[in-house]
Length: 393
Ligand SMILES: Cc1cc2nc3c(=O)[nH]c(=O)nc-3n(C[C@H](O)[C@H](O)[C@H](O)COP(=O)(O)O)c2cc1C
Image (cartoon, rainbow, N blue to C red; front, side, top):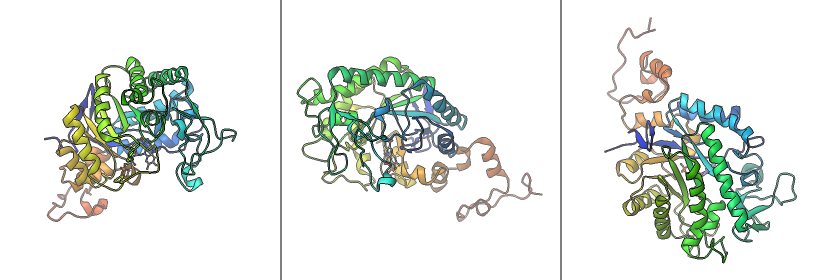
């Protein structure tokens, strides 16, 4: 039975363990580029033992960013910055994944800590704002994103799908080996999928099939250019937690359709299309895991999820139970770049320091490597290091 530290193979890619750093927008890019900050921050997580490292949602178009400070891969000039990051992640023994996205009606924003909240939107005529787009002219609302939404024409939808494909080609050139489509959290694809944001009466709105069309065509466009031997996955906004929004049972059906179109793994999360959520189980440790198990049972597809899995025993249980194949950690990865090493020790893994690069591992295991000198709390009964270790003189 696999556990959190078992390798995981999807297509031709093998992760050294089941721990992934979840995509997290950092608001640190200039002109959409990745630079030294990203190299430092993402390289540290790869060195800290994560098996798969995602930077943030990476925009397929300038107006697909959350703020002007967010990363993109819509321009060839941006490839070099990404390539530095992927080379470092690989050098540290991890796999580099990219999450491609378009923020849709939830773009043109201010950094959350500057605005004091998530979702503070700038008007289109602001120097750091732009005209946001969506399925329909329905702003997100709730006093946050009040500006008019341009409803995409069918031609514009096709152009967005081409941007997805072009971004995927650049991602491949930059060295990414795992591609996740961001279809969640209220962004463009999620808003097409949600009846709360999508009021269209054409082939992209109305029935479940029509609301899923934008997602399926985006996946098809990427599948065409993304190599068959590399994982193509998706994060789906699988529930709006509202009677008028996306229903989880429908999402199970849609994941089945996407599987038929070449999806290799589904990562489930929330719809994020409205602030009006009824019982969204935000702090629950097992709710998303239970839902992942349901999808797996009904669709038979590898699964991943995030949310509240930072306690090692919970993350490990999610894998042992068979519900998920990969655990995505967001805030725990921000809080602790070496979360996998720490978790390995908590879970009684024989050699936690096997997870760091070989040179560090050698010192940590051999050079007076007992717990108190490193700063670990001592485990009762753990053997003290024998005398005469290398460098001990
Ligand atoms: C700072 C921050 C930025 C985030 N940005 C993204 C993002 O770009 N794409 C995404 O899919 N989720 C994003 N998320 C959500 C995380 O990927 C993750 O799903 C969520 O934090 C739940 O996992 P956790 O409980 O381990 O933190 C972000 C979360 C945080 C804390």
